[in-house]
Amino acid sequence: MTTPSRFERCRTAFIISVTIILFVTSFAKIASLFGKRKFLYATDRLFGIREWQLLLSVGLVELAVAGILLFGKSPRLKLILVTWLSVNFVCYRVATWLFGLPPPCACLGSMAELFSISQSALNVLFPLVVAYLFLGSTMLLIVTGWKRRIKDRLLSANASNNSR
Image (cartoon, rainbow, N blue to C red; front, side, top):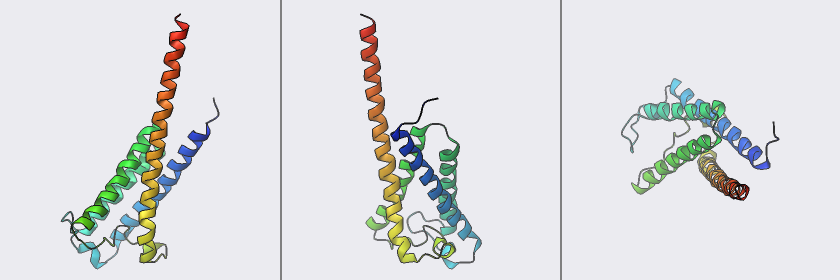
């Protein structure tokens, strides 16, 4: 068994951190469904469904992605899923901005209450977390592609040298 490279250790640490983030945020979204808050019955202005339906759907998707990050085998697939999820978060925020809708306040459910964090702090924290998810996964995917291309070129060069 070989010792993991620095890159592999970094990628593993990133995936573990994202797994924790997704478990926490999915728990917060799903846990918020068990309260009697008015916002749960409001209609999401972008999708036209009730907030509780949106929270449940996104919470379950986050939970599924976290499960794949925890139990999946392919690091590349894990990074693609994190990129996909973060792009969806960005698209939702951009769409609400483009349509002039008020910023979503319940994207993390009752996380503010569960962890005693102010809503204004969450409004700052959320874009930072999404940036971490997107930039981290994208950069690691790019480096993975570079490493694969370099390895393929070295293997093909060795094969052509050995055939002479």
